[in-house]
Length: 156
Image 1 (cartoon, rainbow, N blue to C red):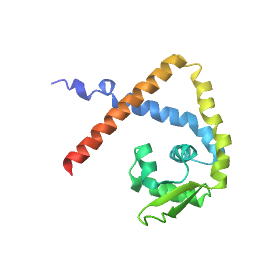
Image 2: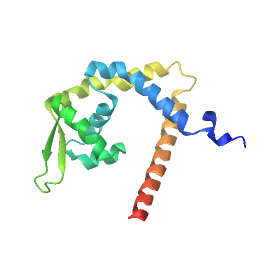
Image 3: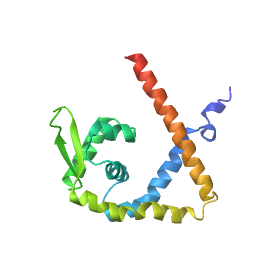
Image 4: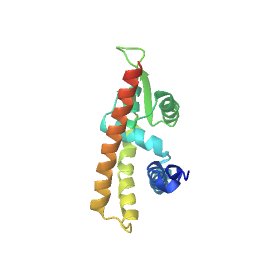
């Protein structure tokens, strides 16, 4: 048996993984200027859209487990970027909101995607192709995330 299905070039996951890592690496110089990591940047983008939401809501939007997100949020609180506070209605819920510093970072962070676009100007893909790929990836994510939730419901 040749095991074609186990060859790296035949995998869907590897080019997605590699592209993600390379794009994250391209973002890093800009994020270093802000003093944050890529996962922290993702949390900030969620909060810049909707401030004052629960850990669970952030985890859902980022497709992360809360036990992965909680230490990240604690570090961000220590850095003075966010505030964590128990919900007045339900003590089990922790609300996350931006600090003044977190809100101010939005202005500087606005340049981050623009810098990536500058790097991608020399890409073999046009901007239209990149946007089409982004849309297709969102459809794949929605499908995979929906399938995962269906599996979880079936096992409960």
